[in-house]
Image 1 (cartoon, one colour):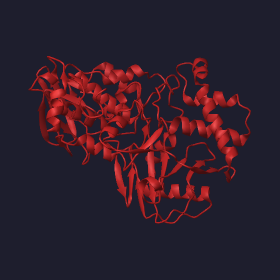
Image 2: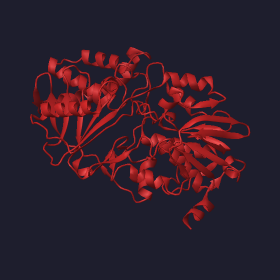
Image 3: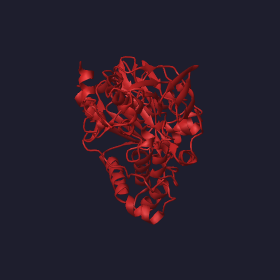
Length: 455
């Protein structure tokens, strides 16, 4: 009886689509944005059908069993839990998360061939915090067309650093602040709006059992059609028609939640075509390329997580997270992004990527790694249903472009996704916020999904 009780408490805007018993919303995409909107509408009594191209739900959240280890191959963290609707949902549904208490034990400098101690970490910590503190001044001095690489150079040129320390400092700025956070190349991430998003409190957390625990709870009770690749969306004053996987779906409204990379690629034909304002905004935005290589071993042969500073400052396999305690098996997950990711994603095979990570680990630890028992390699960059990891703003792009992508086209066609939320783009909570936003737009004044009552 719980769904009926919740429906009775829903507050619906009179005369809105949610108030019309004939409303049927077709949600394109079963990622976090699509599932959030669908669940919110469903609990308010609105008929919803979710159309998903993949053979699974979750989108760019993807928990897979790599042998005995449950590993998030896509989004992995809750970046702050206070004021985070993902955490609110998890809390209300008895789902847990744990603080990210990663222990970084090894810092290896390839150019000197040395594993560095606390002194090396201190140089990097000071460079990272100093650069972030200097951002407002750098933005004012360098102007709206500057990149984060321009800002990095300006900042480091003013520091009195040895050759080694400058190399470490550049790594901290390039990788920690930019390429592992925004996923785009440091030479292409714009400075003007860099680091402007509000920060949620509560620290980084990792979902127990991976994001699939949250995804599965979100999807409960929804009508989801898998393996339907949407190719056409037609909309007019009378409703919407969607062609997907050889089937035709009719509805009153469509909510498009595919990633910005897919919208930019023109994989879906819209009739009428998307507005010039939206296509122009899409052309100015870009999508980063954060990827992972997962290695699961029989035994834990290393000591803690590993930071690798390559000699050319090109971002070669920079971070190796020891997630053994979280996954329940001896597990290392290498994260890499930015320019290096774009380069190797197009040219290296899975086997070459795995071999490259093992070579990096051998150099950093001074040990020959055993052959991993299980491996996984992500390909978000070339995945046709993602075409990248998440949105970033190059020079010339502004948060107004994100709002333009979020804007409805006519009365029947709506948009959601992390790349449509101007304040928090690039995060899972942005995707959830956008799904809640569109549920409100359709007339659900009060969300009655447990955990989201205040949203």
